[in-house]
Amino acid sequence: GTSVITLDDLSIAQINELLDKARYIDTHRKDVAHTCDGRVLATLFYEPSTRTRLSFETAMLRLGGKVIGFAGAQLASVTKGESISDTLKTVSNYVDVVAIRHPKEGAALVAASAASVPVINAGDGGHMHPTQTLADLATLRSRFGRVNDLTIGLCGDLTFGRTVHSLIETLCRFGNVRFVLISPKELRTPQYVLNRINATKDCSYVEVSDLSEVIGDLDALYMTRVQKERFFNEDDYLRLRDTYILDEAKLRRAKPTMAVLHPLPRVNEIAKDVDDDPRAAYFEQVRNGMLMRMALESSVLGDELPGFDAYVNKE
Ligand code: CP
Image (cartoon, rainbow, N blue to C red; front, side, top):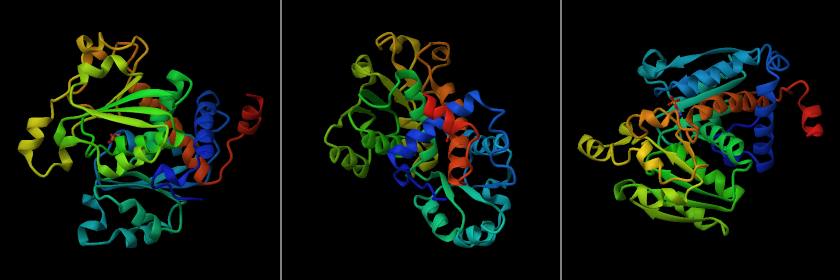
């Protein structure tokens, strides 16, 4: 099986197949419950997580496999100075697939180079978060029937928000997306991500600072948390953290069909009164995250979902 460090490691056909598989899994839970019997997943989380770790683990359990790992590196031998490479050479003896989250950009790639089993990046610093993007794509597809031919606003911490970087990278491959990048000037999108948009002939972007000014133009609004853990200076964080707060008053200017996405966890950037608005899609994203991880885990292991081929051929 292949490792997934960024979604560039998968073809568009493979991503579309994962989207189809997640939809199949959702309605055929019993049929897929033994897909990964005898398999073991390791979750190596050197950084906090609620959704990603628990959904990777639930996904494997729901496919019939088992799970080992650590949540927070304080009990692992990294505290004695062990390298990522040695850890992965070790864990490769125990399991069939690894999901790793690490505060350093590039850590997942180092892990994959050392491992002899597939490694899935569960977030590497401010760089990439490919499985979150799979959840985001599934949510866009369920809301709009497609993931492109859309105007998508991304709002908040566009510098350190790895979910934003992964999503833009992948949407550029689907093509025909207008990005509205909404951030304070201190938290603009990194150049390597902008280069990706520039290199895609039917995608475009604008950079703005005012959410209210552009919200009426958007098909989807992807809100993000200001990434406290990536700041060098606490004063900067405190000054910037509440720049954008989406509430019902702001949503009045938005299209009735606009979808509000957020990878979660949120702090203040979406008011709780938005949760009951039909445009709120962020808890759908959570659910899609688990289904997409079930699809991805079974795929990287080469374990076929019983009944899936007949289901897609019928569609
Ligand atoms: N969306 C996301 O990655 O959430 P966690 O940090 O809780 O895993």
